[in-house]
Image (cartoon, rainbow, N blue to C red; front, side):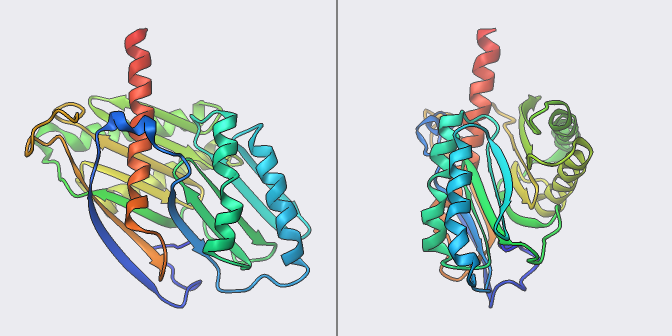
Length: 292
């Protein structure tokens, strides 16, 4: 496939590795965020040749139409394979609103190429000409590591491992291959591509967890995107931060985001969205538990 792997650079003439440190806003503001903000893109070098160039729009139109009815679909039409997926906690209308933005973005971001992927904060869509070189299910595409570190005096690694085990079990047992939950102030989220079997999903999530440990170490938060799954976690040893926190109190974390981008790619401000939407999901879940 043709997104932007961190460790594989064959699809692009050259890449730039960007590391951006930006403030993490109050999690209660997540509800105001648009799920259609760009997170990252990937575009193949190869151009889309006829007759495929004429067949792409009907494929994209059919995927957009399906997104109003379900959160995942994969189809092959006229020699092109297309896949979209929405985050597991979105409604069908929110899913449609997210996916419907991508076709025009694909044209602006990539043009007529043989394979492309666009990841928004609430969904992604990718397509490729049949026979195009595939990326492994567990290929690392994109990572976000919190700049703040956690000392293991509080047993962070043990908490993280327990939370990771919850995600593995949750995505396999949920039926939707999506899970979000918490374990001792450590909030986790995971999702697999919708056509994976339970076993493959669990294996993909496990690979993402291993990448989180290797890539982000003892960072207080991380988001790891692989080809067919992703995970996210945030640890709050002093409780969830709020806007009322005074300067220097830890109320605003700083997130260091590292991603391989094609030259002229995503603006740094778009990187903020994944963490915030994850926190929205967490707070919604916590609110539900309190009402119960």
